[in-house]
Length: 318
Image (tube, rainbow, N blue to C red; front, side):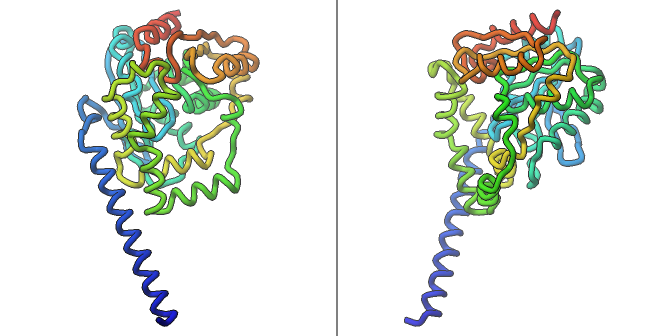
């Protein structure tokens, strides 16, 4: 058999394999969003310049903006179990950050400053008043930086399990850039994304990171997170590749020292290194108050909603 024949067969086999993987990817996305679990509540849309941003608004009183963790499966649903209580004394806004949940997921590189601009524009255009903010996980640096740049937009800031200073300071290097390039590839990158955001992977993260007590994990929550990560079809992987490439990271040492707002940290008892992280933040800004919430891990607002809502209310009412 000639070399040309071998080459042609290799090309055909590669094309067939890519076609099968693409079909599997498409099927996985369609199955993940078939339940339409995130379509079951009223919502509003902010037509931002880089894409439509989903948000909800409820209650009356001083504005309170709730910002979810910056993860591909996250959305405003993260706050669903505390909204009812908080809306008794606040006008509560929840936002799905660009690239997350029900918001648009443009095929771009998501950067820290993209989100800083989004939060700035959202508060100015949608809320229209100085606002209290509650934020969790990897989104905390975005709020600290936005506040440092636009102090007049923020009043009290409450952080739940913020990233460590080491995590915040990570920057793109040749290794993570190469991995980002791989994820950005249409077929193989989408397959990697589907594996990382499968129900099995999401369940594993809830068991090992998000919740302290496995018995508290509602299967519906897993399904919602799974659906959230797959809305927007295969371009949803763009945020994942940006996170893995450290483009969403942001050093906040300088900003945290400068801001003069009331700051409060809620840490989950079983959140990894949370006591050390709180100490890091307090060393940079001694005015920070904090409390460790028992029997919970990374997402106390879902695992211990009543206790979390009470802590939030106590801080915001001061």
